[in-house]
Image (cartoon, rainbow, N blue to C red; front, side):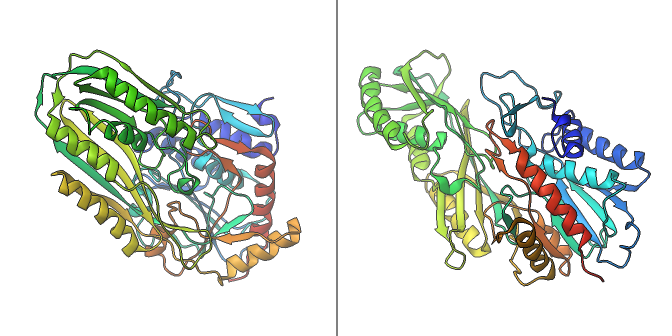
Length: 480
């Protein structure tokens, strides 16, 4: 079945058009031009600000002129992840989609439903002629996934809306009123390399689920960097390990699914036997949550140089010591992760080491407590640490008028109460709210599973529910 034939047809039509346009984070030139052209072709006031955010304004429909004005907001970029056996170029190709029962998914890559379904929904409102709504400002931000630079670059005075509806959450029964902030922690060091003295072994970890490093961090999924660190650490007592290379993980906001390391050891057979025993334990630990996990440990060859035994030990100890996963649960909001860290990427090549982390927390002091712990571990090993890309969390305001309205409408429409929550993801509301403190904000969206991984999929009935709910919200926005 073609996507354009499923309901709501207008959303899936626009989602298909959007997904034909490459839109990796930090490389959004094509999608910016696409959205700009979309607004201009509708005859609507369309502007692109100095960082690349697109703002499209649409007047209120007849009889809605005295209602509070609305900002509809989603981000244009998408997380670009693919399976290793898939040949795909995110910078030049459109996403290849298919329908699987009640789900839309991509063929071996991320789908881009995060946040493409939000973008497509806003496009659908903008081009509609029969949906009542107040005055609208559609805000399409850039680079949400790798730096929040669109939201950070949005200046005061660019928007006049009184209520912001962010369409970027992943459970259709939730109304989100708060989120975590984050900071990038980057660890680097340069080591001298020399010809390795021992036998070469290759360790490979693959088949993990991956997922969103905020929304999925509490689920106990495997992390390829952590598993590699455990396997390397297991050989330190009896082996003289020299690290040749490590290539594991990817984007900061994705739980790493696969990785590999090349090492030199004095006795390859002994190392492989000991590591294989640990492999058995790890596979048993993750049997329930990671049934696809594969660990391969085998003899190999490499002519590349290695870093010294002493430097290798420092790197391995650091990988073993870096905190990964939940750091603290919120004492104030039930079942909410307050602070966490994702050890997202480990790369060692030609003596150049880089370890990328994303630390999140809904409490700023807690965020830096985690980051400083990572810094302390790395500096003890003589490594360099840089903090960058810090952005604030979004403090919940459960009593706001828009939240109360949405709770009431949801309950009446679906005969059950929604879950009013805060999330551990990084939404742009906190950043935008810093420049627009009087603007009421709420986030909601259709059900999406596996975001930030090639298993990403969007639920078709949920998109129908979300679309109907949004239209009711717009029709019932209170007066100014």
